[in-house]
Image 1: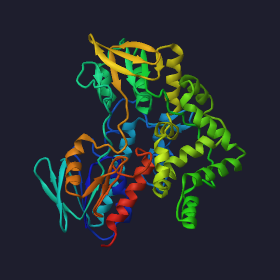
Image 2: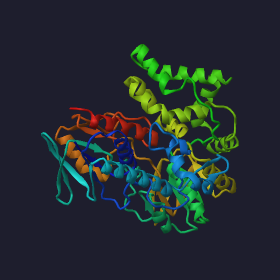
Image 3: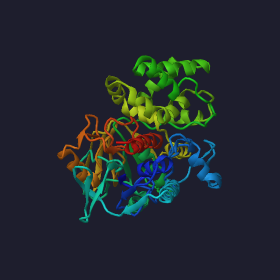
Length: 473
C-alpha cells in the first residue's frame, strides 16, 4: 500500500496522525509539499504575533475523537497566551503551526517504526497522468511517482479581487502573511479593508499592534462582523450530539435541517431558554448596527445562556457529520445563509473584539456597509458605499475565497483530474472524485463540510480518507 499525499498543511497532518493510529502492516507514504513551511500550510506559517488562533483549544485538536490533544501539547505554554475575557489560551497562529509540525513528525516516526517507508518530496504535483493499477503522479520538476491511493490536501483558494484592482499600487490582493504586507503600509495612511470577516479582524488588529495612526475603514457589502466567542461553561449537550444525530438517521433513514432544529430546541428548553427568542436574535443580526452588536456581545462574553455556545460548538464538532446526512435541498437552504451562518459559527476571539471596540470608540475605525465600487484615482482609491464616498491610500483585500475554490498552485493538477475523468466539479464548489482511490480532504472536497476551514471538520474528513485508503481492496 503506497499513499501519496498532495499538500503538507493541517489536512495532511490530520491524515498522517490517523494513519499512524490505524494503519496495519507496512506500506509507503509520500508527501508532496514545495512550501518552506511544511505542515503549517498558509494559515499557520510564521507571521505577526497579533495573528491569533481564532478558536478555543477544544476546537483546535487535529484528532477528531480527542478534543484535548492540542490542549495537552499546549501545556505550560498556555498561561502566557491567556485571553482574560475568554479564560482560554489563544496563541499566535505560528505557535499552533508548531503543534501541527510536532504532530506530523510524531506520526511519521510511528509509521517508520512500524516498517512504513516515508518520503517528503519538496515539489508541486502538476498532474495525475493516469490510473491503471496505480496512479501516476508528475511533479513540476519532472519527477514521476506512483501510488495506490492519492489524497489531495491542497488547502483553500485565494481571495477574490472583486473590484479588479490587481496590480494597482497600494492594493494588497492577498493579505497573508501580514508581517510582509503590512510593513508596506505607512503608519498615517488611510486604509480601506475590503470585507468584515475574520481576515478583516486580523488586519485591523495587526495594524493597531504596529502602531497605525491613520483612519481605517471596513468596507463590506453586508457590514456583518463575526460574533464573539463566549467563555466556555463546561456544558455537555444531551440532545445536540453526534449520537442523537446518528440515532435519527437509523430510525428514519435521513436527517433533515428541521430535525437538527428540534434537537437544539430541546437542548435550550432543558436549560430553561426560549428557542424562538434565541432564533429571532440570530436572524436579526444582519440588519443590526454592527458596532452596537459588537458592544453587546462583548458584554455578554460571560453570559450564562447556552444557546450560542451549543450552536457554535456543534457547528464544528457535530456539523461535519450531520452535513453528510442532510438532503441536498436542506444544504441549499443553508448555503443561502452562508455569510450569517459562518459569522455565527466562526466568531472572533474576545481579545480581538476588545481591540476593535476600542478603535471604534476612538473613531479611528469605522464601518461602511453596501460597498458599491472601488476604483483607483490619482494615486489613491475612491470607495463608494451606501453612506457616501471615501478616499483611501491603501486597500487591503480581506474577501474570503469562494468555498471549494481551487488554489492557484493546484490548478494544473485539478485540471488534469477533470480532463482525465478522475474527478468532477461539484455544483457548490470543489471536486468530487470519480475513482475510489482518489480522496479530497479540506476546502476542495466537493460536497464536504458546510464550514470548510474548521479544524474539526478537516480532521473528520481526514479520518474518513484514511479509513478508505486502508480498506481491503
